Length: 453
Image 1 (cartoon, rainbow, N blue to C red):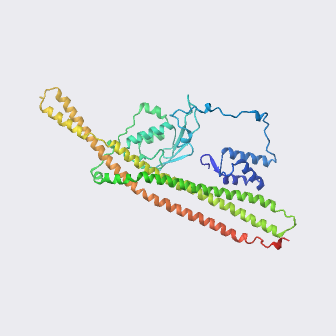
Image 2 (cartoon, helix red, strand yellow):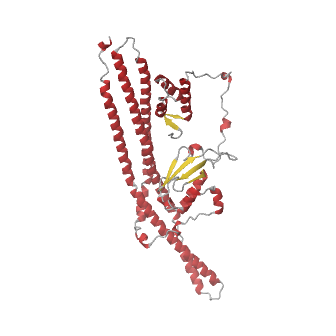
Image 3 (cartoon, rainbow, N blue to C red):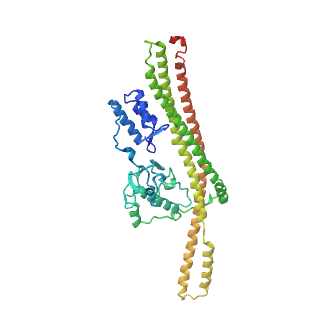
């Protein structure tokens, strides 16, 4: 189960332990394959370790390559060859939000997996494409990086007053039955081809009108509530980002300690093989020392596993949930910013024009050709006012709904830290039990120097 193309050294060690090789050899292989002080290995390092295992199992030494005139080679880099940058339309892999890992996208009961596909050669540069699988629709489609941005742009236009997290979102109810999202997940045609013959409907308020009962639920002081909620967002977002960094640092240090315990376990195993041989035949005390070291080594391995599990829990759940809450805060802030940008109306100018045209009508006879044009203009302006009022009411109802959701999301923080504390108690208890079980065994090891005469 690699994460970002790497696995912990402890996972590699478990595999090497079933190779049948001596502990000294296993320790040497890990030291050769993995970088010093590293806690994880990549695919190349993993394969090097397996190749060394195969050589050791066949009692073969690592062959040295023959490289004639190696010292005569010039390794000065031509900096000009690195000056060309990729086109701005194609982001670098390191900036690719879905390139380094599989992303799970929950739309209520739907589980979406987004995986990066092998690069495809283009005319000027390579295209990054993605394979999207939907359990709900039982479909698999291929999308480009630009397709995700097009979808987000459409959703922002369609739901300007909804909280829309970065794609692909973890869970958001407004997208569950959206026809555009469903098309994105199921249409086998390329999005660029589909767009040539289709134009998505981006006016949500025309289909979902606010009833009088829904309108009565909108508080009169909605604008004040929104202002109070948004006022603290910048600082709150920054605090969550700092918390994420601190928690990751804690988890990485714990992961490093887990690896150190594993290395200590391997080194102790190598030492035990040497300590089994005593210059005094049938030395009872030395055998007791070896037996005690074997217990210590075993418990060091258990300690490594516990700390690795604790680190993984923090990385997989605590960090993910902190990021989720931070993303929600950012999305709410963006929703509020869109509200300020899109809430402009033209009621005054339209009403002024209706009054002016109505006054002109009273001065014209019924047979005047201008009458029909003025009536059409008045009717159009009245329709515009109607739609703008519908849009304004719908906007306020959406903002009220999103503010309510945002407020309720605070309970998520309670669950986050409840689970975090429970996990810390669980792993601390496991560590305590592990050391407690080792304690009587180390006290059975001989300490009287006279016993070694």
